[in-house]
Length: 216
Image (cartoon, rainbow, N blue to C red; front, top):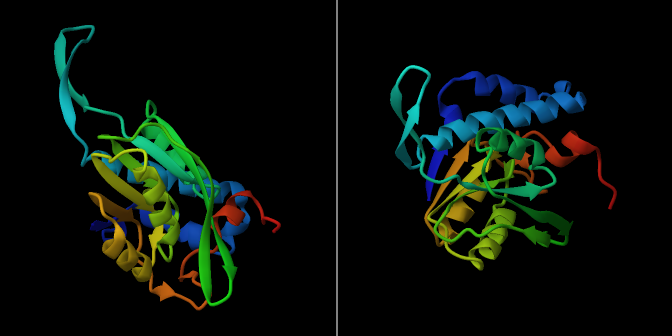
């Protein structure tokens, strides 16, 4: 699995990520969602540079013209609920893409965490480019479980995993366990996971910050 850290080079993405992390700015829920969407826009553009293109002939008001366009729209798969604002950024760029949704969340307790999946609605993915959109790559378990379920429906041409921030432990877990062609994209590789398996410095619970604290 290739790993691409967009945050290794300075860009306006750094400003948006700073605002996502800042606990004072996080109080503005709409701004948090908007910054996640903006980063989805940027990530979509960066991934688009690795996709396949074909020449298309068009007629402008003045003459015929050749322009390169996407050979195939990628399939977008969002991990709910935290991934929805981030997903909307991708959808703004890949506006003709088929989309799917996975409900996957951590169940805490005992010595570790378990990942529960209770929803999967996805289009056909066989021989297609798939972008799995999940804002936080912590342990990597929810991402891998989601990928495992998706692969039961077919093998994609290539899988792009899009995370806002990633922990080294999650990256290592995916490196060891993903069995298909894949690239991980992130804006930051953070320091570590803490004893509760949250990313440090991280940004908190993206789902709660976007939509309000859940009960249960």
